[in-house]
Length: 138
Image 1 (tube, helix red, strand yellow):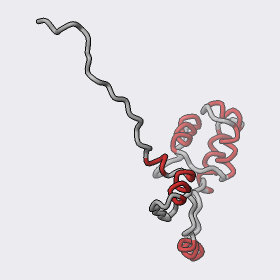
Image 2 (tube, one colour):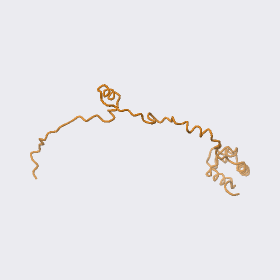
Image 3 (cartoon, one colour):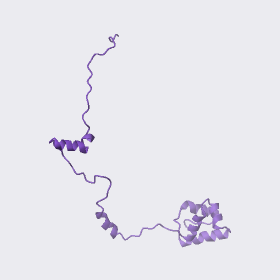
Image 4 (cartoon, helix red, strand yellow):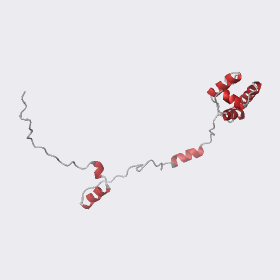
């Protein structure tokens, strides 16, 4: 199959593309259209200009009327006493118990003071280290 001499003598036309819609939104392009008498349509978009929450007035009344106290569950006094009794029965310090369960001494301290939020993993480690049942039915 012979394709010819290898030259393509067809005309090639290169044109400049029309401005994109983003370019037509530039302030300079809008001003030029206004000066030349072209028709310019401007539309105010709701919530344009970011993520500002200007409609907060609806929710503020609902939040003000909210009376429910939202707090995390803390360690009960029974659990605190069980941990302290189990630790003293094994003759361990808080630091020794913390080392035995691979936690910081501050964690053991918070559990014994009732400030900690109960975590089943930590309670399970304490049960194994102290030999005392801390979770579930007694």
